[in-house]
Length: 187
Image (cartoon, rainbow, N blue to C red):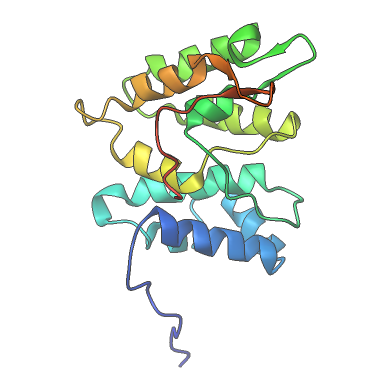
């Protein structure tokens, strides 16, 4: 009889999930990454769920799905940066990005208008970031934000809207940058 020898992670959370997911890309475990992109539960989804507490298992599994979608065919892991709102600000083309891009505006509006976690719209956001060759949101922060989606005090959707519409500022060097009001969870 074969015994399962892979240990269950001692610590749980978005950091551990992200570490495992990025190791799949670094180690070129394309089969596991392909499993994550499937909509029906697979062994890889179940493994991703181990990193979260029981009440957030589905969130961890679906963040792993989003990670798999973003990293399809990639050989370099992207840890991401900022909130989903800050990432959506990078969506666009030559006509404009973020608030200046009507498609990005509509997409973020659909995400933040939802009372339930808007998985389909999150998938569209991640897919658009990938197609625009822009970094994803911080996978750590995304996991944390989604576990607090229904917490009225956390106001996750509002925070994403603020990050998306955050005005650009001029630095002393004359380059344009975006101020970030929320800390990146990976720092």
